[in-house]
Image 1 (cartoon, rainbow over the protein chains, first blue to last red):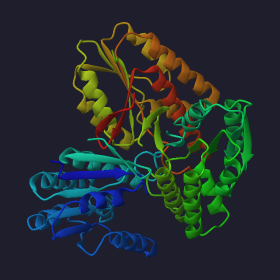
Image 2 (image 1 turned 90 degrees about the vertical axis):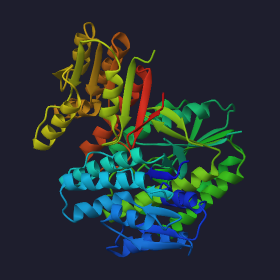
Image 3 (image 1 turned 90 degrees about the horizontal axis):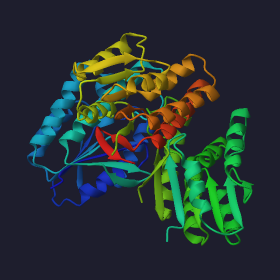
Image 4 (image 1 turned 60 degrees about the vertical axis):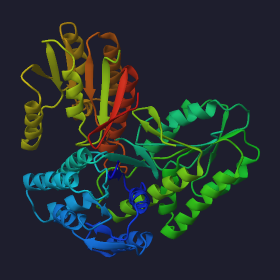
Length: 173
Length: 173
Length: 173
C-alpha cells in the first residue's frame, strides 16, 4: 500500500495539481491541507489563492510555516487524508527564522520519523531546486543543501516518490 | 502513432540534436524548421550557426519569434515534417514584447490547439528552466512560471514527451 | 558488464553517496578516489571532510583538479576500482585556469577516450547544472555549456548512466 507519497519536480511542473489529484482519490470527510506558506506579498497571495481555488471545499486548510512534524502528528489521528504543500517553503521558513543548519536537519529527521509513524494517507509536495548553477549567494547555497537533504530524507520515509516533468508523473520509487 | 513529440531537458542536454535525429527519420522533401530565436548578439548567432550546421540542407528554415501557432498552422498542410526549436525562447520573446501573462497563456493554449489539429508529424524542443533556486528577479520568476505552464500545456497536446539527461532520452509519455 | 558508470543529478541529490555505494561493491584492495576539488574556503573544506568521512580508510585519495584524463590513465592499470568526484568541479577548474572552450572540449573528449580504453571498473560523479533559468553572467552561461557538453560526452563513453532524484537512482542508460 502506497499511502505515503512524495511528489517532487521543478517550478510549474504540475506537482501541486498531481498531488491533489492523487489525494482526492482517498475517500473520507476529514481532509486536511497543511500549507507551509505564510504569504508575504501580493505575488505569493495570488499563488495561494490559485491553489486554494483548485482544491474544493472538502479540504480544511491548516497553516503551519514552522512546526510541520508537530502539526502532522497532531492532525493524523483524526484525518482521512493529509496533503502537505510544500516542504521547500517549510525549509525556507526555518532558514528565515534563523535556525541553525544542524537544527533544521534534526527537524527534517523528526518529520521523517512522524511520516513513518502515522497511519493516515499522506501526500507531500516538494521542489527540485538544485539543478541550476551554483548560486553566488551563500544563503542560497545553504538553502539548496538543506532543501536537497530534506528531499532525500523524506523520500526514504515515503512509500512512493514521483518526479514531475512538464506536468507528467515519473515514478522514481 | 507518435507524430507529435515534445523533447525537453536542461541546457546542453542534447535536446536539439535528439529532436533532429527523430525528425530526420520522417521521409519527404518538404521539411520545415521553425526557429523562434532572433539572434540578438554574437553568442546567440554562434549557437544558431552551430545548430544550422548540424541540420542538413534538406531543411527549410523559417524564423518566427512570436506568431508560432499561426506559422505552424500555415506551414502544416504542405509540410512532410516540422521541427520547432524552441518553445522557451518563444515564451521569452513574448515576455520581451511586453505581452501580459494572460495573453501569453492564451497564446500557449492556441498553440496546443494547433498541435492537436494539424496532421503533419511535428517535433518541438523546449527547456527545463524551473529546477534551480527561485530567482530574485521578478521577471525571471514570471518567465519560469510561463515557461513551465507552456511545457505542461504542450506536453498534454503531444503524443510523446521525452526528457533528456546527459544526452540520453528518457520517455516520460 | 556495466563497469563504467556515470552518476548525475542536482545538488544534494545523493550522487556521491550512491556512487560510493556502487563502487564499494567492487572487491579489491587497490581503491583509488580521484578528487577534482581543491578546497578554496572553509565551506568547501567542510564538504570535502564530510565526503571523506563517508568513505572508509580502504580508499586512497588522489587530488587532481586539472589533468583528470592523465591521472585516470596513470592509475587505471594497478587499481581495482576508481571513483572520480566530480566532473563538474573539474570543468570549473579548467575554466578558472582560463582555458579556452575549445581546449576544454578537447580535454573532455580525451577523458572519454581514456574511459573507453581502461579496463578498471570506474564510477564518475557529475552534476546537473543546466535546469535553472539562463544565468545573466556570461561565464556562468559558458560553464553551463561546458558542463552539459562534458556530461553528454562522458555519458556516451559509459556503460551505465544514473540520474539521482531525491536520493533515489533512476537508470537512464
